[in-house]
Image (cartoon, rainbow, N blue to C red):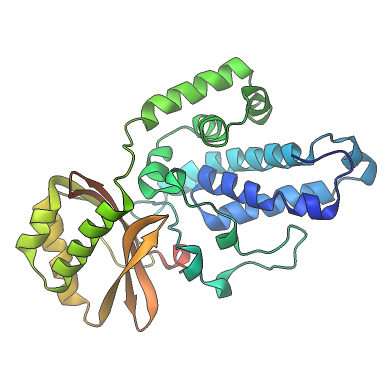
Length: 304
């Protein structure tokens, strides 16, 4: 939190927290960056006397950023109804592999534009968690993320939502019940082993091995956004997913599979001629893959 008369460096120092909040609320790095930049623009649009009246600039910026995200979440629902195929959150690479050339303008008042150094990769950005957050209403998502992930008090959350603290608490509780179905991921080591075996079976086009690694009720969801070829509806069943994966391998000569961290969890990345064309996230339970999320929309792969 800031203090009365906070300086430019201190204000810029809030950017990391704001990016973390906005990404978890929106599931998009680009939209999170835009929301934070908008909040900073509003701060610098205040007169000096107005800024000095704000006791906690950090809290003010968080409130404004969260309100912007709340508005974006409302309009996003309509946009995603027109989206071609399934919409998935934007996958995040490990910060050591971030495509720095794809960042926004680093000269803005908010400081360096590269969010790779800002977003904390923990369980609250795992793809399984973000996908469940997509099922919440905008108000539920804001109340839950701000309180359960970032520990903001309901008095501050009420200011964001324009509701009473009691209403905010009720929204967070409702969201918590729905999010509780998202099981915590297995250990990174356990998941890495399963993902490695999936990679090996895919490369050798071993359908039987793939079927053995997939839960019989597994579901694969792909996001091409109408800009990259992929299935428009989820593929259900381990056997069908295995057959689909092998069919893709037959049609994609020269595709190279790499084991990479995706949102802080072991996943796979497919490259062609050194360019990332697909990022796959996995949910693993009892040694078997239960969910696969495949992002092929090139607009969501810029950071890769």
